Each structure stands twice: as structure tokens, then as C-alpha cells.
Length: 175
Figure 1 (cartoon, one colour):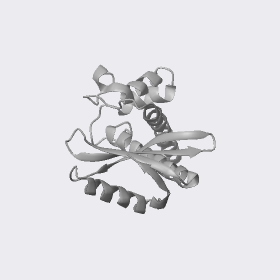
Figure 2 (cartoon, rainbow, N blue to C red; figure 1 turned 90 degrees about the vertical axis):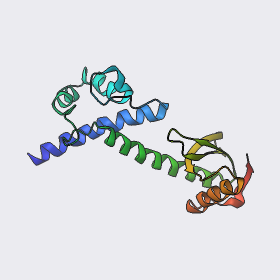
Figure 3 (spheres, rainbow, N blue to C red; figure 1 turned 60 degrees about the vertical axis):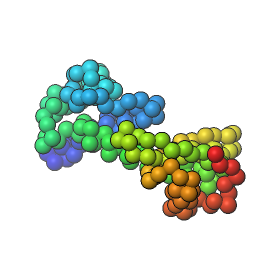
Figure 4 (cartoon, rainbow, N blue to C red; figure 1 turned 90 degrees about the horizontal axis):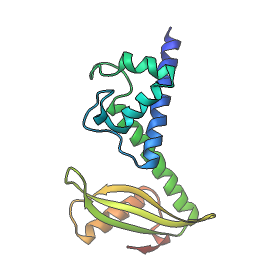
């Protein structure tokens, strides 16, 4: 029975990862103003899971049994699990981008500061470099900054380079 439960939850996580990857890759909105299944305002994450359940008997059984039960009920379709998967994917993508930068050797960086929804200032980091199949431009990350002074931008960027073992000597352009 434990093996059956483990297999069940493993399948749930596979579905969640698939939907999370789909939305992330396309830069689509995950959640809306409500976490209740079958409401229009719950947006893409829950909406896609419900849509898949029309054709997927596994999800068709899982969602009605486990959705909308509240915080103390395990469902793995909650926003917390979605956020956790998104964070894991973000870290993996950043690792891949940093590896590409190191492989290509020379790179340029573009950055600017912008406040996010909670009014916290952040530095947007975009890298440009050339791979064997041509030039690429990749958004890498947001980094928190305390103010809009150029020295702060430089400090945060240099710390990012050092933390990720990116050689600043290979930086050929910045904007």
C-alpha cells in the first residue's frame, strides 16, 4: 500500500512539473486571484490541470478528491508546490546559462534597475554571448539592490560574478 501511495504522489508531481515547465517556458501567468479549482480567476496553473483532467483519468480522480481542501490537506496542486517547482526550475536554468557563458568565454551584460510589485528595487540581468550555433541573449535573474546608485549596481553585479565563478576579465561590453 505504501508503494501505491508513493507511485500516486510521484505521478501527481510529474503532472505538476509538466504544467509548471509549460507555463515557465512560455512566460505565462501561473496564478490568479483565487486558488479554488474550477473558477475562471484561478488562471493558467489550475486551469490547465483541470483541463487535462478531462482527458487524463488519473487527474480526473485526483483533483476532485484532493483540491479545495485547504492548507492542512496534502494535494500537491497548491500554489506552494507550484512556487517550489518554479524556484527549482529557475535555479536549473540559471546554472545552464552560467555554463553557456563559461563555455562561450566572452560575453556582454545588460542590466537595469526596476521596482517589482512589492516596490523592492531589483537589478535585471541579461547576458549576451555566442554559442556554436550563433548569438544568444538570455535573461538570467533579478538581483535585489538597495538604491539606484551606479556603485551599488557594480557591487551587486561583481558579487554575482564572483558567486557564480564568472570571470569579469571575459566581460567585453556592458550597458
